[in-house]
Image (cartoon, rainbow, N blue to C red):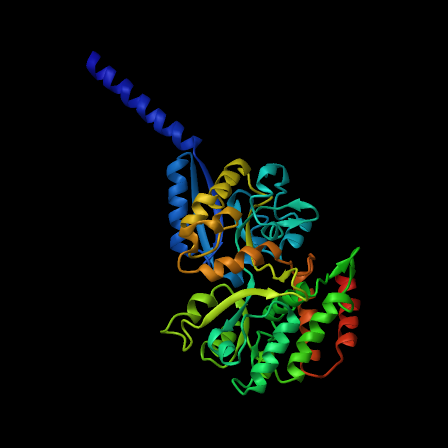
Length: 413
């Protein structure tokens, strides 16, 4: 009988211990997108490793297409404990999410020592109103890709280092009859157009707002549109660019029908793949040049990880976010998305097989320029798309279109 009682006591103690562990375990819900950069399998693998190192935290993962990500986050805002704790969000959403209290301000959680270790441009992904609303995670920007063979046949010794040099080289290539339209862009009336326009505004060192007032009809923002229209009028840019998205640009460039193309990181490996490209081995990549040799141009196409305002477990959330954005984890998956950490780019394991891209990224990521920041971004973007297209289609002068954009956007901002 005594033995039975001892066994029963041990059993109850063990059961109580398991029960206590289960109740002590924190469960957080995380929302990611199901395409681009890190894959679903990669994020699951990262999370499994995190859980092994942090057995007291359980992470439930959910994946949705990028197109559904924004609305999914907004829809879950009032779900309380049943909502999301950690969310992946686009660089164009912090202003809206901050205004409508979707995300927590994590400024005090960020170690000041990280400021100089992470690219300055990466920080703009999660920054709004002088506060931080998460950690940058997926980095992307647009680069200038060029066909090495065409440049060589034209007698050009190096890719352009300024926008004027880009224009001049394209003119020379066209004069020599090497390709009908040396330049190709993604200028369809879509967000792709805004990304290209933002890159060129960055090239001219422009700004979108000054003391809260729209600046699209002046300075670098107007010069960028003037340059775009000039390349069309001179026959240097493929006129179909006005209907092209990024994949159209990739296909035109990969077929050898353009000397220069501006596109995201992903095009580098695909354009160098002989199964998908006629110019494999002839693809060069450099930062998009600026209006002088002292700086380069880049748009921030990145994404960050944030903690929702409704989350009851911010400490566990931050531990998970810190793990995913850590240098060790990002270097392990660097072939899928380049790290946010500056020192990673000097490591042979990161450079191998993508040396040119990494070299370009060192400069471009540090210079990433944010698209216009406003809580009314979708409406602002639509307004800009319409006014830019009117100019590119030759239906309205650049200054007139952008003055109208200023008026409309001033009511939104």
